[in-house]
Length: 183
Image (cartoon, rainbow, N blue to C red; front, side, top):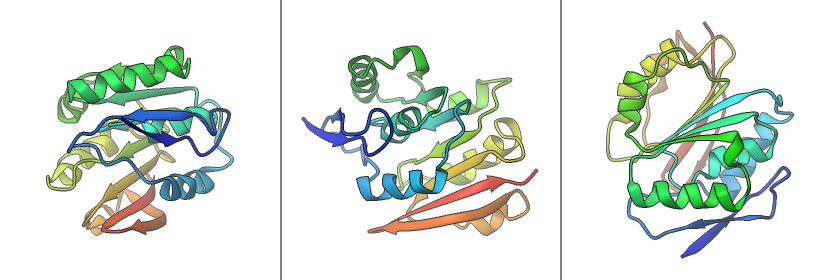
């Protein structure tokens, strides 16, 4: 088992344990540092959605930096169990909601949930962005919602009328883009 260091906030320096799993590709520390430099100062009352949570590093960083609540979605049982243990060890279970289900089912079945910050970091070999992003924009967002998308090859021009590109970064073959919902 290896670990990821939380890079900022009140949990900064603490470790998130990770397991070896071919489906897990944690966002590198350098990219997480970049994301949270973009988001500072973060409003303390924000509610965050971390789809394809994996290790939970993005959502845990959000809590560490002042988010009020984070909803984690992780389908893989082994990754879900590890995420639960990490939240328990960090004493943040009262600020999180964990769902062991697919991102598609969560997005399709959940009603009346609006988020201030959404992390969409799916496996690169599927077409999750194009299938999930329209529903996230229409059903889980409001004007001003921030959506961070990490993907190897994503054509965001399809979403120009709904999203404003704020920032972007890259690491290897991964591109991270922070958008703001405009309507």
